[in-house]
Structure formats: C-alpha cells, structure tokens
Image 1 (cartoon, rainbow, N blue to C red):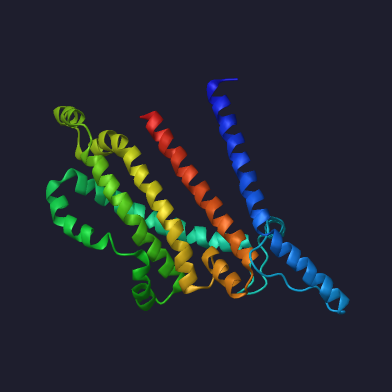
Image 2 (image 1 turned 180 degrees about the vertical axis):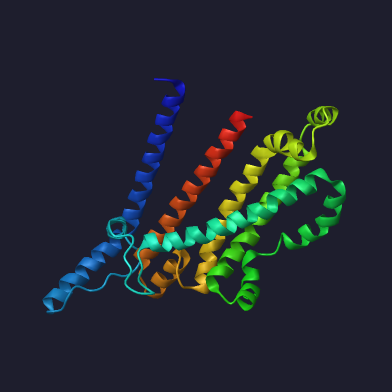
Length: 280
C-alpha cells in the first residue's frame, strides 16, 4: 500500500471514529428525553389514549428514520407546502447555478479589464469598496420591489453575493501574471485577444477558480437565508416550514442536507481547481 493510500485510510478511520463519538454523545445527551417519552407513551396507553407526540431535540434514531423517509421518496409533491427534499434541493440548486453563472459572465471579463488596466482599476475601485461590504440580503427588499418575483429575486441575490470574490480574485490573478510572459507576448506581437486567452487566462486560472470556490460557498449560504425570507420552494423554505410545524427532526435533517450539498459543491470546484493547477 502506498503512503498516500495509507494516509487516506488513516484519515478515513479517524473521521469515522470522531463521527461515532459525536453520535454517542448525542445519544447520551438525548437519553433522558427518550426515557421520558417512553414513560409518557406507557401512561397514555394505560389511560386508553394513543402514544404522545414526540417533542424536543431529536435522537440519532429519529434522525435516521427521517433520513430513510425522505431519501426513499425525495420527489413527491403533495401541494405547495409539502414537497420532497429532492424537489426543494432542485429549486435551490437551480437558483444558485443561474445566479452563479450570471456572476461569472460579469465578474471574469470585468476582472480582466481591471487587472490589465490600472486606470480602470482606480476608476472602479471606489464603487467596488462601497458595494462589496453590503449584505446580499439587504438587496432583497429592492429586488422584490423592482422584480416582483421571489424566485428571480433569489437569483439576483445570489448574483450579487457571487460577483465580488470572483471579480477581486480575477483582477488579482490577471495583475499577478509574470511580466516576462507578457514581454514575450509583446515581442512576438501577439494580438490582445490571443494574449488574453493563451497567456493571461492560463496563468490566472487557479486564482480565478479560487474566487469561484469562495463565491459558491457564499452563494449556498445566502440562498438558504433568502428562501427563508421569500418562501415558496427551496431548502431554506423547507427548514422554515418544518420549524413552523414544530418538526425539529426534519429541521436537523435539512441542516445535514445543506452541509452535505455544500461540501459536494466545494469538492467539485476544488477538484477543477487542482486540475487546472496541475495542467498549468
């Protein structure tokens, strides 16, 4: 077995051990609740009533049951307030993907201009510094008022929060391209378009993808909060709706789903980033 494979195996075993420890602590912490719930159920049976409704923080077993239930039928649709987790995730990922794509179409070309031209950098920097610190959710009321569509407003918020990391990283990556490479391109009389695609873009690609990775993480954070505000569909709305129904088990399940999906999105862009760095 190679050293890398051995290290991966050790890290996987350690992660599994930590997970088991956390589940054990969780089970012990919720054990009094389980005992009290069992006593309430026995009392209800003696009184000729049905079992009492569970309340409080869910146990690992209850979460496991919720996972099986939702995963077994993720795409059911029983009305506006009762849709499967697959449908909810599809709406959220669609909004994130479209807003993220629009941000790429603006941030990467504009970042190239800023990185290649000190004049444009000095002209746009005050606007960037003013707009960048504004919370994306602060734009939601304006978006709802002007667009008058909650779904498109969510896409706009994702666009706003995704633009800045990509724009700044693209400009930094372009400005950091080695002068020697640019001088060689100038000596060979390479056209500006060819220089941008064959010299600057390959050199700046790892930095650009770093900005995309940061933007995707922020976008996935923001869409959950945005969907809580506007309602309708999406994983954020699912969390808020289950909280209103006092179903804390489904809330914890949704939080777990949000974390797993966010990890997968980060892994995808991270792999692409490493691929570009390796090719370079």
